[in-house]
Length: 130
Image (cartoon, rainbow, N blue to C red; front, side):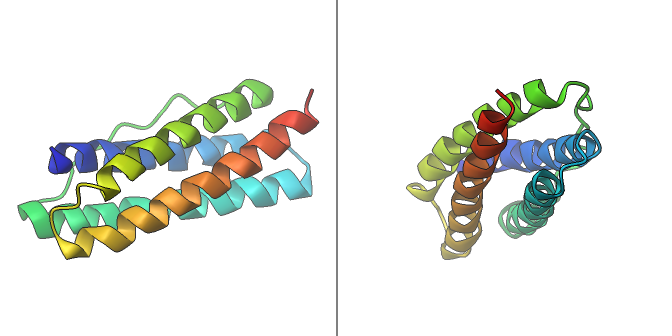
């Protein structure tokens, strides 16, 4: 059901925001920091858009999402971020095909596009660390 996937997406975006914030502290490379900052700012925007959409659909907000375990090993975190971003693209593609109301289309499309961009950024970082 779309609303259930939306709730999970809200929780995932919240976790991703905090995960990227912790990753940001694990590198001094200005380009990687820029890539990561871009991603965490996008994740915050997705969280806010999805909360607004959830409210439109249910009359409530998703309460108290859990924060993730912070990043300790930069290379492992980048690898995990890459996998998570690619998974998110698939989830949002499925959601896009089943949007129940017109207001859902734009936030899902924007998030899907951003997650593809994040995957490219994380892949670039990961491949430079080898």
